[in-house]
Length: 171
Image 1 (tube, rainbow, N blue to C red):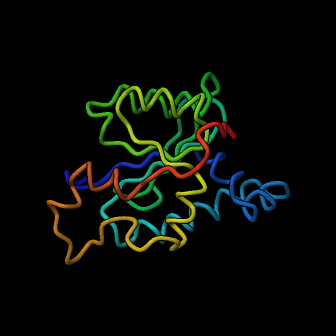
Image 2: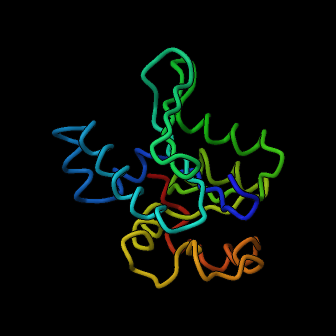
């Protein structure tokens, strides 16, 4: 990851179950819903200097991580002994710079409050989906023609990712 990349860590199932279409698909085909979310994220990260990690509750065993788009998008499954929430919180808190993370979840009680205390920004799942699907103009820095000083600045990202969801929503 380049020093100017923004780190986003996503509560995968929280995002899936926030989106009506993905939620309906997950009821019939959970793996298909995960694959669709990852496809959406591939397009989202393609021309942006972002490092995105999507965390899902695990398949058992050790933490599994797979690079979907090298240096830009990876998926992780929590080990049997931890939830995805715990993996997200520990990843952020144990990092050298928790303020460099934007955490995508609407789960304010289990994840949001803990990572905020560490200094991370939290963006609601519905807000992120809207931004990712083009509901807002510039969501992430474009790879070409961007002023790197602006896009590497934490304040820039805090302005871009505003949580407009109800903080009481712990879904």
